[in-house]
Image (cartoon, rainbow, N blue to C red; front, side, top):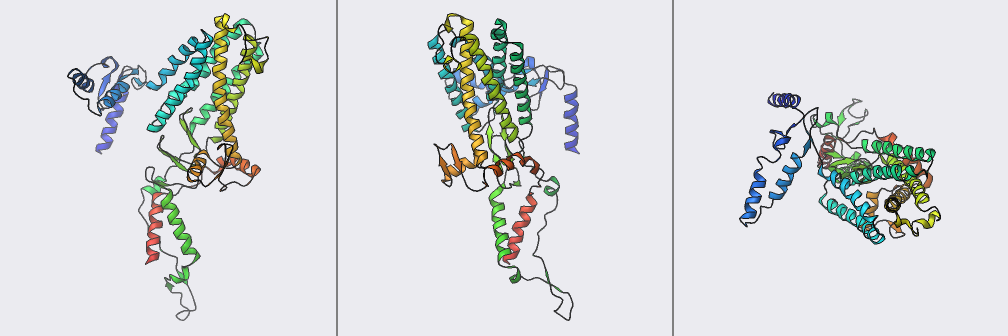
Length: 435
């Protein structure tokens, strides 16, 4: 009753919050106008700084949490909404760097070389901390939107492209975004059966053997261990060891084959392939096909857009050589900006093309990216072409059968998962058999 009263009070508070109010991480009601008030952690950090005293190990992290919690925007429903700070840097850095790169050829070389390096460094930094961030998703979406904006304002305004070509690019961008939204919906999260979790624990005993020829034809139930030894006993032991090995203590479920726990999302995913930072979600059994579709749509739209831009700024050059040699492109700033964006799009397209090739090879060999990394680390797989092709030989059934399984794997999403009580019952069964 007490928890229910607290929940009701919280719901009432949320209903009466104005557009500029919110509930902070301490559970207290606050206002966005008080973003610089009552910050004890910041006061303590500044006080120690001026007194030349060492900072507490957790002081800076607390200040960062307070700042992150207080940066909000007014919202008409439910109070002020929190703004994720990792979304903001791409919105500022990308246009600034692209405009700087368009000033001179050498600046373009430096910027287009440093930008991928900075992105990779930030990726490994966040990947090592196993934390979620919207930086890469923001960079991907803003790059797509900004390239489309420059295409309309710089290329289409010159009259170098027809309305049909603009329509094709527009449809490609829209379809790519729709496929991305569908990919982010559900990766195939493995959830425990709540009825089994909250039910009583039952320990199962071996099945009884009935023999009507014993005791004058009476059917007495007798518990025998010797008759059930052998293959059945070995199967139970193997199932018990498999359940122990696949038990996830965080999600409290027994993972089926090929499922894995994502330490970034904190969930178990069916047929986990990898956690993709560009969509800020896992790629699993439910969204793997739409993930590949998103890559294909983006690559087709990007390649077609790059070709149109190069035809506009370098009309006298072949498309295959225009990126490497386009004389006089830096004489006009708008041409230089379009040429720089074409180079940036080519770098992004090259990276995603490599990802698509790896995904196609993995599907052809019926291996996930997670399984490939584990097999290479444990040296239990055959690899070729510097690790581009990895064959574990566990699930592969041939090229056509592997692709048929991949295209139909979403039909198996409703398979029931083994609940925690099933694991306890199985362990109890093993103990009783030893008796």
